[in-house]
Length: 630
Ligand SMILES: Cc1ncc(C[n+]2csc(CCOP(=O)(O)OP(=O)(O)O)c2C)c(N)n1
Ligand SMILES: CC(=O)[C@@H](O)[C@H](O)COP(=O)(O)O
Ligand SMILES: [Mg+2]
Image (cartoon, rainbow, N blue to C red; front, side, top):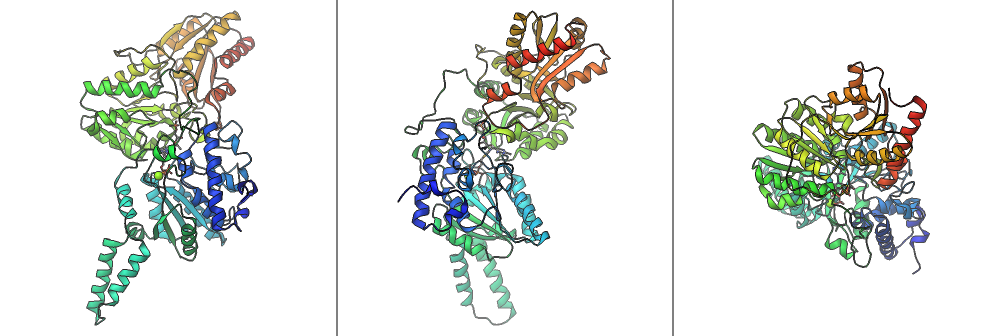
């Protein structure tokens, strides 16, 4: 057989393929996935697990008329390959190239955008309701993983869909994995179903049993119904979904294309919402990913032959690694310290902590809102919860932070990893809003470290405070300072003057401090004397220092890797205004009021003028236009 994939330009090209051809195509798709992700990095294992499912969906349904909604969307590469983006697939996750997540502006086949988890059933239900209101006829399919089914929003949507009885297909892609091993009672329930006989067989057996009960009178009929119910509870897999108003099909081998097609076909005629439970293997078809599905969930460039990740050069440890060690040392000193992750023990650096302190570690699943309120509850009882959540995912828990933690001034520590530009994951994942969504909440202290030692000291300081604290730090390597073994308590609200300069001062937040130091050196070569201040605290600000800088310099440049709207620079402006320091000229550098696309982190920082050269260039232009000093 010739190469089939090169002839697939749209889902229509699948329609006449035989099962054997579809299987061959699955192999070719896996090759493309493996080689592309090996070069560009990306979510390999999740995509390897849905090759057959995606082929079956596109064979059975008619996208874009029928709508597929991918939960999280990290597993939509196959869908992209089959929907006209194969030739461009080599640009995956590169600037200007194919996005790693579904995106409505990228293709009509991407019915709904995603990146954050557990939204698919809600959006699919919304689409289905709109369809019914307009009298249109098409199928709506939400594809959600077992990990994403730990997120509360998925249950809100199941609850609503079951109540409405809307025609909607939910495919549960159960591979027993979130990024790490899936957790929680629902995960255990699904595991039990894996070994259960199929629903249709059980249904048949129950009916057979009931037919053998002689039908004499109402009481026997009632008994028969009760027997049926009891047996159903005992035997029928998926009864939970059935009770929620869904018709359950499964469990079904998610790598068997004929079986998937058969069940999809069956469900087409079912009235109301259906849930199809597929069993798949994460990483299927590539041994290193099958053996190590969590490593290959999201992976950087790697060698196809060995599965070894390609290290660019010897890099300093990441902020995540530094945090990972620091929290263990601090937990050894403080038995009340507990750590919470929302399904990301590895990514947050809490894995080691979980091994060392299994009773003080909580993986709550993809449940950021619950994680925050859980921490608040623990804090009322004297525990010192450290909640470690990527900046972008903490957006979910805004009200829990405000209402459950800050309003009661509870000492919960938020470690916001992946703050600022994250890179290739793109718009859904950049952590560029946290200063803005945290800064206005009363009682909250916000810090951002300039380097690895400061990260340790900030955590140490946070534990000593009796208020909510957020510490935000970027993805990837630290700046490479020699790591201190002891901790220093920082004075709350005190900034650190690093470089003196009479013409202007660069007031830098967190990971912007180093580029500002270099920018100051560039400016010096041009005869501009720029001071550099490490702000350390975004809240409370160092008002005394800002007043002094205003007096001495007259030009303040704030630099942050957050959106300018409501960010650190805005805080400085508000302060200057409140103090009537009217003569001060302020330049705010940060991210614009738009969503930042995907691309390498360094490239994006450069594009948005937040590398050393960009900062220096903006300052030079400002000084040329408005003058230096007072
Ligand atoms: C709100 C939110 N929290 C955390 C994540 C990070 N995340 C991405 S995929 C994933 C696991 C998803 O597991 P599952 O749905 O089972 O998909 P699989 O990768 O196993 O196919 C997690 C935790 C996210 N995308 N969104
Ligand atoms: C899909 C998703 O949300 C995660 O897999 C995310 O891509 C992880 O990011 P890191 O690679 O920064 O841990
Ligand atoms: Mg899973």
